[in-house]
Each structure stands twice: as C-alpha cells, then as structure tokens.
Image (cartoon, rainbow, N blue to C red; front, side, top):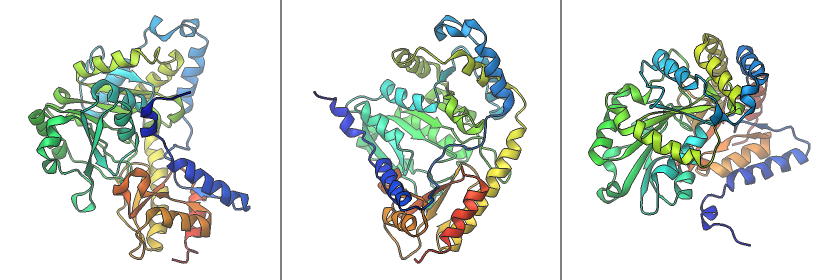
Length: 386
C-alpha cells in the first residue's frame, strides 16, 4: 500500500519527540509542567455557551449547514467595524472558517502550486510552511531578527524569488516572538505586494490578547490592503473558544471567492449552533476581555521575571500568549537546553527550533496555565544548575 509523496514533506516529528520525553519523565514519578501549548485554559463565557445550547434545540440546525443561513457574516462585519474601524461587506468580504487553521490550509491550496513560492517569516507557526509544501509550493524564509523588532526585511528578497512569489504570510501580534507591528509596516507591505503582484495573508489570531494598553490593529485598516490580500482571524484566542473551531477570512472578494471554492470541496460548513455562539460572542458585550487579559498579564509577568532570574534575555511582550526568550550566553542549542530543563526540573519549555532553524538560540513559554502552576514552574527553574 502506498501513500502520497506529499505526506513525507509535512511529518510533525517534533511534538512526538517532546511527548516521549515528557512521558519518560512522568514515568519516573515526576509531575511535569508543560509551558508549550497556546491552548487557552480559561472557559468560554457562559452567555456564549447558553446561546449554543438554545440553538441545539432548533431542528433547523440539524440539517446540512448549506440549507440555512445565519447572521455570522454580518456579526463578523459588525465586530470588524467596532473593533478595528474596518468596514466589510458581509456578502463578499467575509467567509467563515472552522478556525483560522482551515484558512491556512485551504489558502495554500488556493494559491500555491509546483514552482510557486510562499514568503514565510522565520521563526514562525509551522503550519504556514507545512501547508505550502502540502500544496506543492516552495518556501522562502524571511528572517525575523531582534535588531529589526522581529519584522521581515522585504527589501532583501532576491529578484528571482520575487518573480515566482505568490503569497506573503504575516502574523502580528506574532507567534512565537510576541512582536507587534505598527501600521507603517503594513503600509510598506501593501506597497510591496502591489509592486510585485503578490497576495498577502495576515494571520491576526492574537489581536485581542494584549496588555499594557496596547491594541492590535487589523492589516485591513491600511489603505489598499484589501486590494492585495486577506486577513484571518479566530475566536479561539480572543473569546476562549479554541475547541469550538470558529474563525473567519476577510478582505479581498476575489481571493475569498477562490478560497470558498476550495472549502466547498472539503467541508459542508459550520454547525449552526456553533455559528449562533459566534454571533453572540462577536456582538455581545466584550468588556470581560479586560479582566481576562489582566489575568494573562499577571501570568506573563510571572514567567518574564522567572526566566530573567535564571539568565534568559527577553522583552516583556505586549500581546500574544507567549514569551520568547534568548538562551543564556553559555548555551547555543535550544533543544538541548529544553531537554536539560525538563530533566532537572520536570518543566518543559518549547525549543525555539520547533518554529524552524531561525528559532535556534531561543525558547518559548506559554501563559495558558493557572497562576499556581506557573509559580511552581518558575520556582522549579530557580533550582537549575546551568
């Protein structure tokens, strides 16, 4: 029996290795604490859950999703207007997704093919590169360096790469670095995309996880942005709804229409009660996020202070669920550092190389654990013999 060759390009060996390491430590009787996951641990607000519960009783939603319509698109447009000051046409400039992950995979299938190149920041969420390769495309990495505030240098891309480039991936606030992007950078991106005839996809998954007064913008807030691209967003991080699989793609109608064609071949649409929950989330009072983000801020500070105390170098991020930290000067191998930390303390911190070779020399810690667990993890780290 044979499988498609493309599967060899997208195997995820890192997490399998990490799971084996953690399991082995737990087999020794050690309670491990993993700072790896970006999976929000706080519950979905009760009003959203109740909206879905009530919708479950409606037999309309027991049929295929294509047999009915909800106000999901209108709710997304309303949220973008109120949250980002961006006007969207719900009929042509909004497409629902089963989480932004669906958008990443299907956009690659929409745009990429053998010979085409995707411009992908490095380090980055690995799905951008995996989706590109799965679609037969090639990856060209754009280094994100601390001295450039973890923004890519678009002027450094060779002409022969630009000739074959189809798609530029961006993600701010950024995973894994926690970096943020000013609107002037997005203005440069729009000019770059127009000049080179390249689509842009901005993954804005962490727009509403922010601290210290920072408010993340939308790529579409820049003049001309929707002429060259789209933005993905999700309810996973903003609304504590990662398990609901609800997201959206917004922006260029032509690209969204092509994306929808791919989606129609892989999905029947979103379950109706889930759509009703999304509408409640997007249109109801969202002031609860301030308290949620304050909890996250306190967790961020616990990790920042703890990692600095053992010699890691880092900036205090103003957004996302992550802390990106440079290894102490005596260390250069991220994976070996992470293994050593696990062996000595039972705490797992994600190796920067999980996000590609450009992540070497760094580790990433997540704030999606209880305050008590984070305090314990940082106390354990203070016992490290580095």
